[in-house]
Image (spheres, one colour):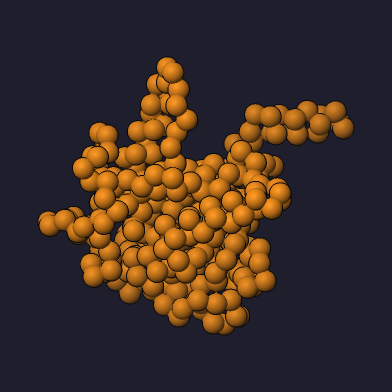
Amino acid sequence: MTRVVFLFLLFVVGFGPLPGCVSLRKDTANRIVISVPQQRLVLFRNGEPVAEYPVSTSKFGLGDNPGSYATPLGRMRVAQKIGHGQPLGMVFKSRKPTGEILPPNAPGRDPIVTRILWLEGLENNNRNAYKRLIYIHGTTEEQNIGKPASFGCIRMTSADVSDLFNRVGVGAEVVVTDKKISSFVRSSAREQSALAATGHSVPSAHEKPLGADHLHIVHKKTFGPTNPAASSLNATKLPNSEPASGRNPETQTDLWHRVALLSPSKPSEEPNNNHRAGQGVRRRFLNLLW
């Protein structure tokens, strides 16, 4: 019996979980950064930005006091993932699917839908996050995404939270900051440089600091190379931009044109197709508000 258990654990750790099982491995590659002033969530993998989404944090401000309905700041982690395989719009009550499916912006309804990433605080200023039931979750009120409208959680559209759910695992770090993404990345890089200068340990390869060596303006819907003429840091709002439900046009640049933070790739004499594809994804897919 002991041998069977050992072989099962060896299979799970080496080859991944069986269908319906929870992986024993913790996600150390992904890091989620949420900017409250920008109402944006950016996913970094191994220090590289790979995805970006609009979100909605609390309309009651920032904090961690029980009963405050505020969004906590600081470092947290994904403690549980709930909703795998459920259809978009599935309503959850007490983290259980009810069987009811709602479309976006269903009138008079504001339940938790689609997916739940339950957060656990890692710092003293967010130690209550888990018992306060602070989640990243889907909402039916998609018209309010892009502005503070929640009761403490981080809300996303059903499509976006499903995508994020599929990209990250339990244990992934989540940072909620009151800074812009670009400022947070730069301060993170400075902290890592200071640690290295004092001889303290620095993150390993899979925990390397967020890169901010190159700034480009990219187009989310363009799959060609970045336009060099548009590499100015002063991203301007373009006319006839595609509208976005629930986003404040007075506080954001054009929907699809933003400043992206991209770390330079190491030069290669003969880059393979996977290398080129990876560079293309980084250049064309992620866009951050400046």
